[in-house]
Length: 84
Image 1 (cartoon, rainbow, N blue to C red):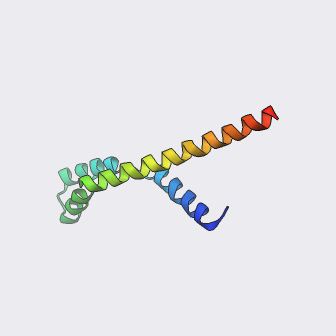
Image 2: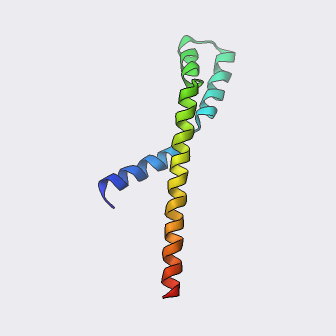
Image 3: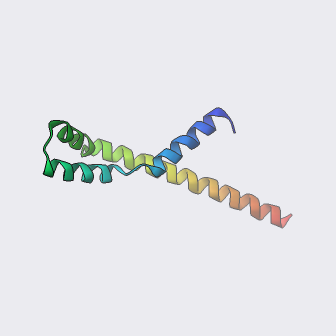
């Protein structure tokens, strides 16, 4: 595995395990309801930004697409190995 591929794998793993932007937004909304601390409000506004939500969805989608692509390649290789 070369450096770029390893770096990409680390990024995909991080994308899969981190909370979604929607989860962050909802948790921050609950905090703001209880205590409208200016810093928490600022964090909520950032998490609720449509662009942040869109980027998060796109990153998760890309990581999932790549995982499915790799899985299909491995399945294809296994089928070819069995046929030979």
